[in-house]
Amino acid sequence: MNIKSFLTTMLCLTVFLGFSQKDLPTDYLKSDFHKDRREQLRKSMPENSVAVFFANPIRNRANDVDHVYHQDPNFYYLTGYREANSVLLIFSEEQTSDDGTFNELIYVQKRDPRTEQWEGIRLGTEGVGSQLGFANAYNGEDFKDIPVDFSTFDKVMFTDFKNDVRDNKRDDADLYSLIEQFKTKASYQATPAIVPADEKIVEVETNIDVRGLRTLMASLREIKTEEELVLLKKACEISAVGQMEVMKAMNSSLSEREIQGIHEYVYRKYNSEFQGYPSIVGVGNNGCVLHYVENTKMSAGKDLVLMDLGAEYHGYTADVTRTIPANGKFNKEQRAIYDLVYAAQEAGIEGTVVGATTREIDALGRKIINEGLLALGIIDSVSQGRKYFPHGTSHHIGLDVHDLSKYGPLEENMIITVEPGIYIPEGSDCDPKWWGIAVRIEDCILITKDGPINFSGMAPRHADEIEDLMKEESILNAFSLPKLD
Image 1: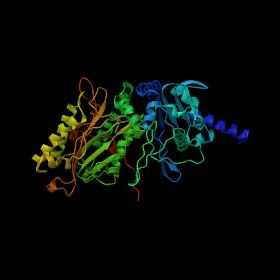
Image 2: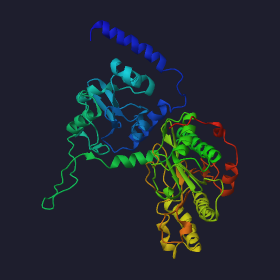
Image 3: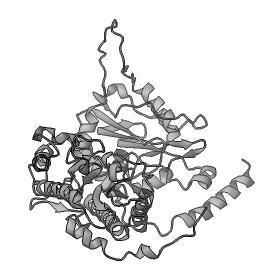
Image 4: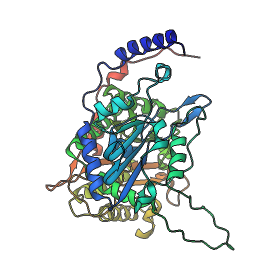
């Protein structure tokens, strides 16, 4: 590039930067939060160890179009950095090199005016230092010269690779290159997935540890800080408002996709960046598919509508499910199943206390559902109940919808779901009047020393309350679009 072209590009970039950095959200986690999380991890690490974290890969959608980038949750938790092609190293003790001492290193995407004109401004090493608080930030291209001898550590800890990273052959500092360089420097050898029966497995002494880091991160992430709870509460309340707006707007002619769209519009109205997981809107028998995400049924009719959706707000995701009658009124069979699930959830929420386990919470609701299905004649013995309630009742939420946890006894400031359900697919071995009924009720419950707090409780759960809200006028009723052929 000649000097004139360079100056022109830099001028364009300066103008672009001026437009891009104004009026941003002010409630992101602060750099001190991420710094503290790194320090807490360092304290929990074995002596003479290093923990290595890679950013998420860029996922291709098709041809030259990629999916919207989403950072690896652990990487974001420890850094606040939301860009691709980067690697973080945290050391249990101070390290020494020719440039001085350090206990952490981060390698990030290099500033590049031409690329940034197309893809947006990068923080670069200067931004990572000033905005994220890293004293030792380097460009990814410098990773090949990292002043670290991995063979000197007792443990080199990282999450094992899935071999799902594309090689951008035009960039020798892309994620693929960073991983390959690390493999060489750390003398990494992947364990073969299949070993021929006639070959002996030879144990090789190594300092590579691909299991321990998950446990350390789970210990950190399962107990939320005050700052995290603020964001989680907002994500849950946004999701609850989405449920409420659909209840008011619901009518028998709405399609699954329209219902999904109302939820997700509410998320965007509150500046939620993502859905925490693919949105599930199952009408009638579709609700019996636990992770149904096609959402293609064109009208809801008189069926139940199972809606399992969660807003992701600044990295933290809710997980909220409501089941409502499309025509505004539960029929006799729908109400019987719904009330069973509601009673099971009430028992589960009441049992969500310090010291309880998710297994115990599951048992509380499962007993109610099994005995209720038996009383309704849907099953012949309580041992058959799992056929219609095939999943667990609780999981942790946070940066992941199924968040990292060791799943021990519950502690204060953990947050879990309570989500019993009953699903009776068409063709089930029971009276056909029950076929196609699917009910799940799910809320996000904070564990405190004073008892459970329902972060998503503003969305009605009791059947009578749902029917009452569905009678209210929706502001969306006046929204119409031109008919298209």
